[in-house]
Each structure stands twice: as structure tokens, then as C-alpha cells.
Amino acid sequence: MNSLLSIKDLNVSFDTPRGMLEAVRNVDIEIAAGMSVGIVGESGSGKTVLSRAAMGLLQGSNVHRTGTVVFDGHELTAMTRPDVRSHFGTGMAMIFQDPMTALNPVRRIGAQISESLIFRLGMSKKDALKRSFELLQLVRIPDAKSVLRKFPYQLSGGMRQRVMIAIAISCNPKLLFADEPTTALDVTVQAQILQLLRELREDLGMAMILVTHDLGVVAGNTDYVAVMYAGQVVEFAPTTKLFADMRMPYTEALLESIPKIDHPVGKRLLAIAGRLPDPTDRGSGCSFAPRCKYFQNKCLEESPTLKTDPDGHLYRCFFPIGEAL
Figure 1 (tube, rainbow, N blue to C red):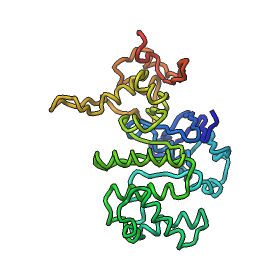
Figure 2 (figure 1 turned 135 degrees about the horizontal axis):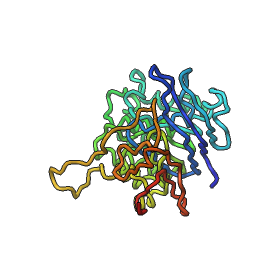
Figure 3 (figure 1 turned 120 degrees about the vertical axis):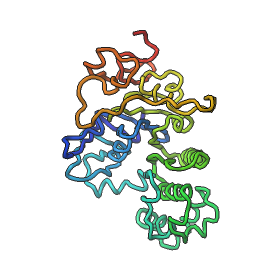
Figure 4 (figure 1 turned 90 degrees about the horizontal axis):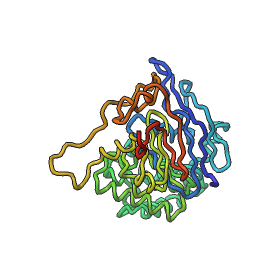
């Protein structure tokens, strides 16, 4: 596979008063041009840290990162901060979780979209404003001309998210990171945003990394799925293969926790018992073992490595689903 983004043995940790916090551990991911990959897991599993580390957004003396990140032939982990930033906009872009905090509350929408066009593409202010109008139309915002003059607080959550998408795609990036792009939106608006991202990706030929806690979100919007737990990728497979033949008990538990339309009214939703392990004290054995309904003594004593099926399906489990114990 000719990789657009290649992540090799990526580890990210933070110094905290309680000790070293291991947020991402030994992650390997390859993404080709035009490919869409979903990164799924509970809050605290390392999804957002992984995406921000890949873009080089994590800075500070308390941040420790090892491994390599190669984007479009450039090793970002060996570059200076200004050189990494030169790939933002035209190379990589991100849609952040909360558009209300990501957008500047005291600047008009038109100015915020125009900024990257002027800075990255060298457009004049007049041309950038014209292009901003076209971008708002592209993300299906009605009355785009009046929206250019508005402030973020004057827009609904769905409209603000569309503005964030317009900013992210303004310079035609090769890779788009979408970090929980439907958080806090109602179900109808979620579906519209996901459909919009899918259509834009196809029309513009972008690769996309879709970060979410919901397997239902990645089902129709990605080519591959990486499932993360306790900072590690525990399963990786083509999306259709993952849903047809998942191997990880954790992936199964995530799927079972999704509300189903055919569930009887009043039926209690299934939840994954227990909680994520302490990231400052990983302990021994499989990280998911204390919460796994299939665990054996071996799971408590040894840490499983990634196994690969002949078809390329990766999973991190001693006793995967579908194999006799």
C-alpha cells in the first residue's frame, strides 16, 4: 500500500503528579490516499491523543512522544514545529470536537474562514471572502452571505460544525482528521454531518480519520476501523469484515452497548462492566481482562500481542471470538 500517513510504534505519555501517564502505546497505522479510517473506543482510550500526536499538535515539556509519523513522504517527528505547521491546511486539517470553543467567539465567520485562505494560499482579502462564501455553500449552509457576517454564538450547533468543516477543507487538504464531529448534536443533524463528510471526501479525494466512540458512526462512513482500548489498537480490519467477523471481546461489547431500533420499549441498555485501567499503572496481563466475559487465567498474567489472520484482520487477544477455548 502506498501510504499517505504512516504511523510506526507511536507512544505518547504525559508527566503528571501521579506519575507517567501512558496515553498511546505502540500504535502502527497505515493510511493510503483517499482512504477513510475510523478510530473507535471509549473516552480515555487514546483516540484524540493519537490523532493530535499524528498532526504534531501536542507540545510542552510534560509531553513525551516516541516512534515515527510520516506524512506524504515527510517524517513529521523529525521536523521542527514551524516545518510541521507548514503542512497544516494544504496537507492535513482537523475538525475539532466542540465548534463553540474551536471558533473564535469575537470574530465573524467570514474572517475566520478567510484567515487560512489568506495565510496558506496567499489570496487577497476580497478573493478569500468570495471563496469563503463558496465554501459555506459547499457545506450546505443556507443564506451563506448573511452567515459570513455573523458571530459563532448566533449559529446553531449544527451550523457551527458545518463552519468548522468549511475551514478544514478550505485549502483542499490531503488528509482530514474528524475528531468526534457529531458530539452534542441531535441524531438528525448527526446524520447530515456524516453524510456531508462522506460526500466531501469522495468529491475532493481526501483521506479521512474519523474519531468516535460509536461503532454505528463508522459503519457506513469508513473503509477500515481501528478499535482502541487503554492506549493500544486492539483490533484493525476492513469495516465490513469487522462487523461480519469481529474477533475482540471489547469490540463485541462496544457493539452490544449501542441502542437497537428493534429493542423492546423499556429494555435496559447493555453497558460494559468496570472501567478503563489506570493509565499511570497499567499492571500486567491483558488490559481488558477485568471487564471481559471470556477471560481466562492467562489473560490476567500475560499481555497479548497483535495477531494477524490470513486476510489481514488484526486483533490483540488470546481467546478471540469465534475460536474454541
